Length: 158
Image (cartoon, rainbow, N blue to C red; front, side):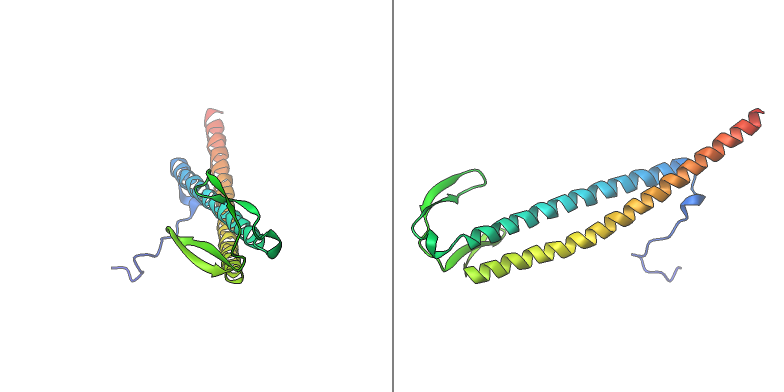
């Protein structure tokens, strides 16, 4: 029995693999890169939404009291309303829950969300970069093996 933990992955030297195995590894890397890139895009969209929330919260100020504003009921349906309470806003804290917060608390909440996402984006970007480096290395190995095969066939033919 091995003393390694069950979650530990086994390292394989890609230069020891044949072309069909390399092609399988390449497909897997492409899928991982696609998934990571989609996640990156979704995080960027979420960050943009939180930044928009910061901008909207900053619009709740004394000079806008009793002005008509559009209140979102859904993503595409807005109704006119008047801005009455300048000190408090309703904050969507997730999964359908809303909390009344002061403007300062709301700004702090949204800014912490933006920072949290920024940290995750940086980590995800680093992971994507490493995967892309792995992909480039894999492609170089595949090309070298193809050249070896072509050279072997030409020497057999000659």
